[in-house]
Length: 374
Ligand SMILES: [Zn+2]
Image (tube, rainbow, N blue to C red; front, side):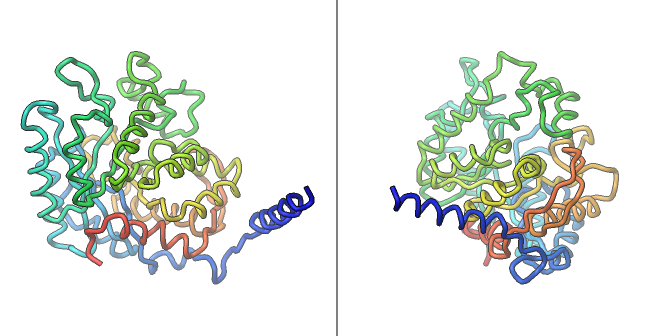
């Protein structure tokens, strides 16, 4: 009894010290001025245009880019995306990297697995550093019996075994933000509210015939459990953006999983507005499992599609990218307060220690994507 009280007291003191720790500007944290100099890696962008604008601003702001090819109907074709990726990578091999993907056409038919592996082998030989799967798996693609194809479908096993054997990471965007299944007035961010209001076809709250959020999360979790040696990255905070507690459980259950932060920072800020020290403790505890990413997209064909591929304020792309990256840096690396339009609130930065920032912003990506040039 006495012993456990004592331990509890020590824990309490340590906990309180952790809460008090607010390093501010100083040797243990970075400043806004450090932003361009620190080596950084944006692990989730879409460079769909073969020009140098994205590379130029990334170079100025100290970023390497990981551009993700994705089977998204509003993007250029997969062939065009691959062509752009090859050209940009050939011109900037240290700065520009890409993930390949595969088509679901013919899934389940004889030969799909072999043809898909052949395609992935070609792309890996071309310099891809991993593979992406998108939410069309689980939400769009149907098999010959007209059933939605889930990621844990055994017909993916052959392709996944190839990725496991070759230590090729899989980045999986499964489902949508949880807001997509909520009434508009319960959504936590303005960007989700306006996007789903304008896109009823993607707004799952209006489509009860489609799988629920939890059904899709369960399929994804069964998939990760089914492939324990697969290097798995859950895009967009593994679609658990609404709760760092839930994301912590996911990380604890699946040691082979990491997650990128792309396009979900405002959801994190929403939680840190309610309990900043909890969110800060989460980032510190899971500092090896989080990859910085934005979803910045250069020149998508339809400006209305950009609500989920931020940002779009009519400025030149490089200005948008610069502002976006600096705002995230201010939030993660410093203790400064900034106004976040998406949640209409003033949010104080997490002032994460330099060592944590270095991992989230650079080292984790280089550990996970082993084919990156050093
Ligand atoms: Zn994306």
